[in-house]
Image (cartoon, rainbow, N blue to C red):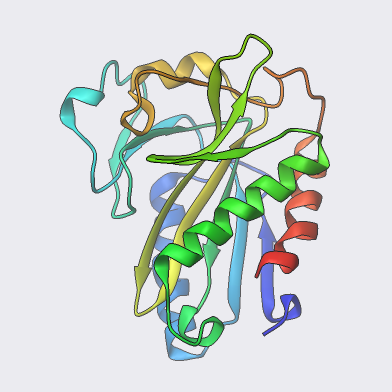
Length: 211
């Protein structure tokens, strides 16, 4: 399959989480039925928290925004303006000779790493920690991108989020992904100037090399 088989959608205004979930559920069913092409949807959400299937109640520290329970993997995370969310809906049965969820997650990680590299940000994996991490100038580690996926009939949905310039204080309402020892960062926090449009172009450029 080629990148041209995929339909890209970029939403210019924040999308309510419940509305996005309904669209994903419908699209996944259509991809499984063969009535829709695979999709990548780039969007932002209004400020909110989501709780994945491994979320712990005690990690919800100060729910200053709505909290949505979701079927994706992972724990609590924050979504909001200034964060690019990428919902990826691919048919793994068509893309992999043997459907492999772990390989798919590695591919998502590499997609983020390659995208960050375009902006001279060195994103790294960490054993036992989901998402993509950077080492800041002071030597501390911080998370710049999150990953949470769900798969139905071997069609993927949910996906990734990359912090461009969100309000990082909003992450303090939860223990992001259950990790206390390390912080959250963004392009802006690292002193990297980029627009959402530039990030979107980079995501589209690197996607076809991975998938």
